[in-house]
Amino acid sequence: MDSSFPPSSASRGPRRRDRHGRGMRGPVAPPQVPISASRAESFADLVQDSVDRLERRWPQLADVDFMVLDVPGGGTAPDAWQDEPVPLGTAVGAKDGRPPVVVVYRRPVEIRSKGREERALLVHEVVVEQVAELLGLTPESVDPRYGEE
Image (cartoon, rainbow, N blue to C red; front, side, top):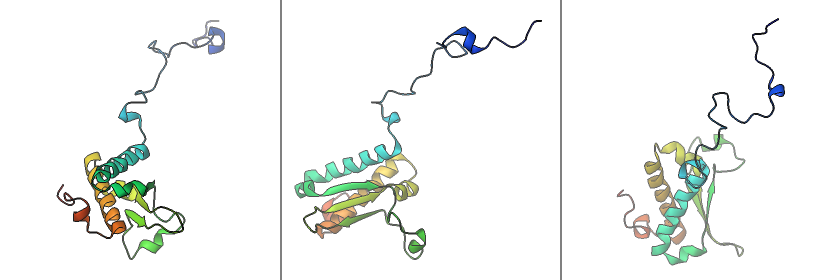
C-alpha cells in the first residue's frame, strides 16, 4: 500500500533547512541597524537628540532628567481630557531634593505626526516648550529656530 503522505519528520531526524532548501530563517536585520530598533527606542533617540542639541546652548540642562512615557496620567481616565487637549509633554520643577523633570509622551506625539521627520520636529518643539516652561523663558529664547522648521 503506497501512501501519498511524506514520512513523518520524526523519522527524518533534526531539521536543518526550511522546506524550500534555503536555510533557517534569521533576523531581518542585525541589531546595530536602525530598522531593528523598536518604536519606543527610536522615539527615545529623538528626544535624546533634541536634548543634546539644547544642552550645547544651555549647559544647566545637564541637571534636568528627561523621560519618555507612553501616555500621560498613568491611571487617569481619558474622560478627564474631553474639555482640554491631551498633553504632549510636561515639566516638573525641582522639589524635595529631586532634580527637575521634563516628560515627553510618546503615543500622543506619534499620533499627531505622519513620518519620522515630522515626528522629530514635533518632539523637538515639545522638548523646547517644556524646557522654556521650566526655565521661565519663551521657546524662541531657548531655541532661536523654534517654529521655523
